[in-house]
Image (cartoon, rainbow over all chains, first blue to last red; front, top):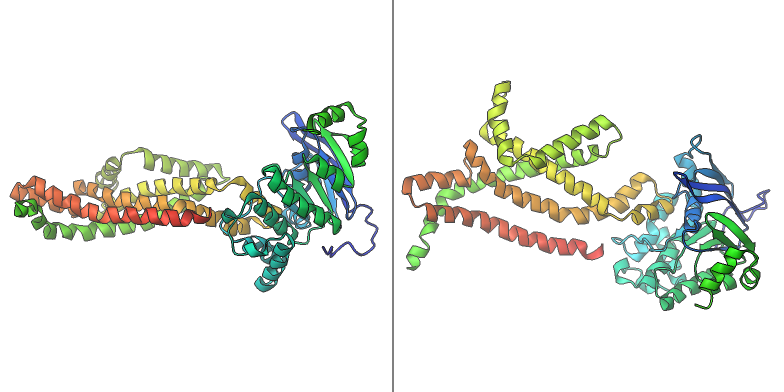
Length: 263
Length: 218
């Protein structure tokens, strides 16, 4: 993948930095002052029990969920939110979202558009690429996820695994600096999930920067460079995936791992 | 016997004069009703409370008050306010109110029917709100909403029969006139029923086909 902005050596210390992210629903802190930094080419997986705020945190990074407080910086873009006093402008949000690709648990492909159109539309509307240019790029991306034969198929004519791979291609089409994966295989049968994970693995090998919320422990262990464990809205542990999985230092991590590993 | 069975058909020519009136009234009501429905649907999600409340009142009255009552309010009530619309215009006003109210609800629920994940996906790929509505939400809402909107048109074609009570010369009025002359009530109203059915049944079938076609990629 080409990263148009960041090949130049600037003083940007971290590729993506989400700092002090807090999301409150009334008095409940779904995400409580979480900070995560990620370097170019790094894959970070976020694991933890359900309800830990993993997905909410991920959705705060591209402001699908408006954090109650916190700052997100990606490349040169930086957007800060402070309780009640500062909401980001549309232009700021657009800039962040353009640099972030997101893959959803439920795919969320546009059902009324063909696979190719699903991938081309935003390129044309957001990046201003010509139809031809966009379609060419979309076709290449479909090829990359092994679905060039499905270019003219509608989402409803594709299996769940194929839909998720098309969704990955759609997210990649804007040349995002960072990819966010929100439990991308949770809605799939394990067998089908494997084909999606295989694509993600390839992309990681090719240098994709990504944050992955997942329950796929072996994927998290083998593919990610770093693992973050979230419990009750906070990060309780962070570090080398192998180290965490073989010798978790936090009691909650131990509990969680013993529940999910070897299942 | 056959002759007797088909004797009602003799009334068709006399009644068919009313068909044109009923159809043109339906046409006008539906065009105006859809427009009103669009405006009301848009207004009912307005951030301005006044506009929102006014829209909701218009919709709820239009749906809650029987059409016959609306018809009388417009035809008999407006003249007291020094407004004297013709019978045809009165019927159009009352029907448009009701059709607009029902259309507004269909439009609103069709937009609501598009899953939240769709606009999230549009936002996530960086599309602005207008583009997201234009390319993602509206096309899907239209596929959901067209069949019920067309059913409203069919329904209001049937409702034009009510306009007979305020002397609009549509099918029922022609039928009633024939019946009072011939006393052949059964045949006359059978002929009237036939004229309505011959239009509504094919139309309904068409809508079902269209519905299946539109739902193909949803």
